[in-house]
Image 1 (cartoon, rainbow, N blue to C red):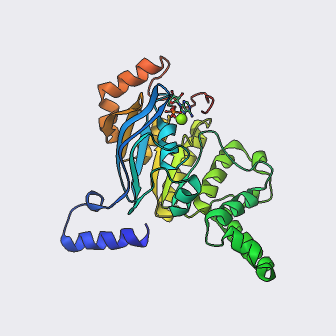
Image 2: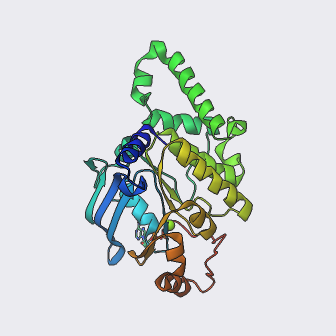
Image 3: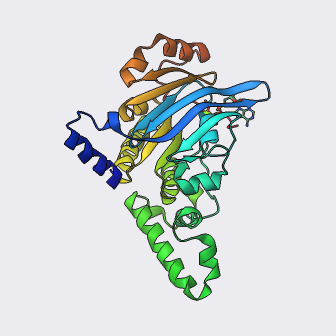
Length: 293
Ligand SMILES: Nc1ncnc2c1ncn2[C@@H]1O[C@H](COP(=O)(O)OP(=O)(O)O)[C@@H](O)[C@H]1O
Ligand SMILES: [Mg+2]
């Protein structure tokens, strides 16, 4: 946990309150957020009060609006209604780079890496774009270029090492085993030093073993980097293991929210899944990858 969480915890302890989580601050707030595509309301009246340090799960059938939610939060698509606040700022309609720079990072349902770059360069690029060593500064100060370049390289290498990816540093991103490409994408997101990390179906295409490893990996980085995480996933084992709180989307609307146990027992949720996909049995481990919009 980061220093803020520590401060908060001691403040809570001093007050004699029972739970730190119940008092923790809101890091991201969505109020009445919607996104329409011509006639289609992909997301509607969406409300979120994301608490610092939590791992929130967002589930729902294909087409429910989960990726659209990430797109509007990260600036890839402006919402057509509502407001989004990150910490003390209104970020509604801001450009993706700006939002990333403020501290919200994401991964994509279909992995996005620089395919013709090594794993190391993928991380370096992310650090340059959003990290403290600014890209333009690096170019503009030629005399110290080599020194900065080396420092950047060392930092990227240490980052890969700390995430168990050092063995792939010099390999092209696309030559990595699938599970490691997913991890590398997360490593890239972390290289921008985010406070909030949004993961869009990180376990898609993974087998049960890989998914279990990924679950541990997410839990570990959550603690180590003091992150607040929102994870969209079809794999219920991953969701149930990671999340204290889950929102269920269907046709763009939140139809249920609560603890894993509450969600599992909610008839609306069961019906949404059964209605949307007759093969769904609550354990869609390896849902086929559909084309991303
Ligand atoms: N850029 C877009 N243009 C048009 N329709 C879109 C676009 N993005 C998403 N949609 C539509 O919005 C709905 C929600 O999509 P999406 O957010 O990708 O769902 P999910 O991630 O839950 O599967 C779908 O009907 C999808 O076809
Ligand atoms: Mg999606």
